[in-house]
Length: 91
Image (cartoon, rainbow, N blue to C red; front, side, top):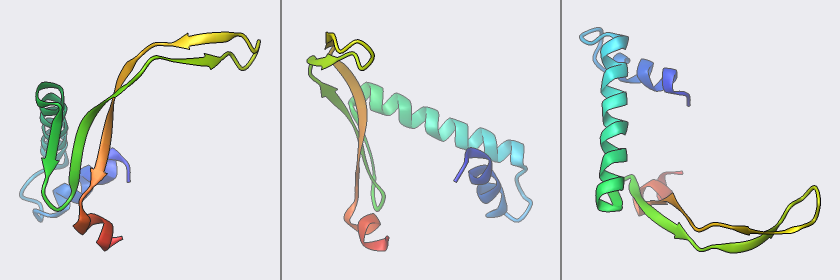
């Protein structure tokens, strides 16, 4: 599903009471709020869907695929997702 499809689905739930533009603003605000929550609290949980958490990757050794030279890959942070039991069972 694309962002545009999500916006159409949200707008369609309200039978014309909100426009696609309003639905787009709602979707953007929702994801911005989730992003801020993950950054501030290191996690965001939505019951029945799952939990987003900040995960830390350690620094490690790697290889440049073109030259084969060994390189050091810096430590980094990423977002992980763990689906809820209900979501897994619904698939």
